[in-house]
Each structure stands twice: as structure tokens, then as C-alpha cells.
Amino acid sequence: MTLASQTTSDPSPPAALTPELETSIEDVLARFRPTLHFDGGDVRLTGYQDGVVEVTMLGACTECPISVLTMTLGVKRILMKEVPEVKRVNAIFADGTPVPSMQDYMARASATNNGA
Image (cartoon, rainbow, N blue to C red; front, side, top):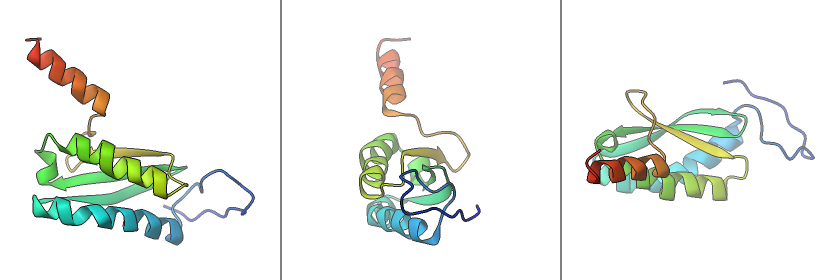
């Protein structure tokens, strides 16, 4: 990742991760870590570009069906609320597969319950 310069009058997010932005993102992630660690999981900031944060769910989070809720209702919601530069959060598991969106998760659950 490279640092990008940005004027204070520019409302768009910085193109690349700055030290200040990284600190803001890490502060939010740090608030979730104790709960994740309690259950054997973790979350790591793995990328940022043009307002899009990428995080990796680690440990027990890769096996946990609640990771979708943790990501959607927790990490993603709070990051976007408290760090104005964050416009979207993409989450992946340690093996590189994406954490499903809440809509995808619910659709799969419904299909499974209906015998599809």
C-alpha cells in the first residue's frame, strides 16, 4: 500500500492507507478483539484502497456461522459509522474465501431449510 496525499477540501476517501487512517481502523478492530479472542477467533486489517477496507477473519471465526453476524452487525457497521473514510468493508476468511453477506447467508439458510 502506498500513501496518497489528499487536500482537506477533498471529501473523497484517501486512495491508500495513511498512518492516521490505519490507527482509526485498528482502534475499532481492537474493540472487537476481546470477544473474538474469547471464542478463539481474531480479525486482521489486510488491505485498504479507495474507501474499501479488507479484513481477514481468523481462527475459530473461519468455522463459526456467527462470523457473518459479527462482520455485518459489528465490525462493518461500526467501521463505517466511526471512520468516515470507510465506505465499504470486504471480509475474507484466512483461506481467502469471502465471508458471505447477510443476504447470501440467509438465502443459503433458507434453501437448506427448504431441502434445496
